Each structure stands twice: as C-alpha cells, then as structure tokens.
Amino acid sequence: MEDAQLRRHFKMSDDMTGVLLTGIDPLSNAHRVLKEHDVILAVEGSPVSNNGRDYFRGKNWLPFTHLVAMKKPGETVIVKVLRDGKEHEFMISLNCTVKKVNGVKVVNLKHLSELIEKCCTEDLRFDLEEGHVIVLNKKSAKEATSLILERHKIPSAMSSDLQETNSG
Image (cartoon, rainbow, N blue to C red):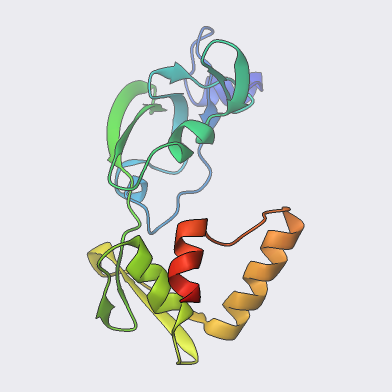
C-alpha cells in the first residue's frame, strides 16, 4: 500500500510494505483465518511489496500469489498479516481436494481425469473436502476449456500421461 492515508488508517509503520486484502475465496482454508482488510506483509517469509509483488529468489519481482501457486494442495503456506495494528503469522493449509465425481470416490489424478472424460451425464458434480460441492454443465465446461486453452496458448488440457489414459 503506497497511499499514506491508507497506511495510517491500517496502522502500517514506515518500514512496512504489503497489500490490502479485499476479498477471500469462501471455499478456501484462508477464509477461516484471514479477514477482509488484513494487510498481507509477507508470504513464506518473503516480504510483499506495496504493489503486491515479491522479490523471488533475490532476482525477480513476481506477484506474491506466485509463492502460493507453487505449493501443492495439502501443503501449508505461512502468511504474515497486519490486523488492527498488530502483526500475526498464520499457517494456512491449501485445499481443494476432489473427493467424488458424480458420486464416485476419486482414487487418484488419473481416475479423476477418467471420471470427467467418460462422464455421460449432463452435469459434473464435484464433491470437495469439508462438504463443498461444485456442479458444472459438462458441455459448457468443455467449451470454456477450449476457449481458455486457445486464449492462453496452452497446448493441452492435460499432461501426456493422462491423455494416454483417456484415449485408450
């Protein structure tokens, strides 16, 4: 946060840098720990700049979310925040594990891919950890996937080992 009035309002000292948290995914574990208008000061011990970037490996400025994106589901990330003028450090477990697809328990990533590709119903229902549910129209999801791949120049929706599994 570079604005002096915002910094004063959120009780940031002159030597602090960070970004104001304006929204939290309600399905994430972070939703239980972080609060709207916390100031994120550091991620994994790496300070977050006032423009939301992190000095990564001592040579590149990257969005601080990159440090989180490098983690796998189930791993934890340490986030240092300023809340009501006091610093807090939280360990947040990254979640988003699919437990079932259309009522079938998912065994592994290959199985998940097979369940999605071989789905013969109009909708795909994903049962996630902690009772969360996502339902996608299969046709719409397939169309959106094609558009996303094209727009971002991504060569494939899945890795070659999963393609082999789904083609046979």
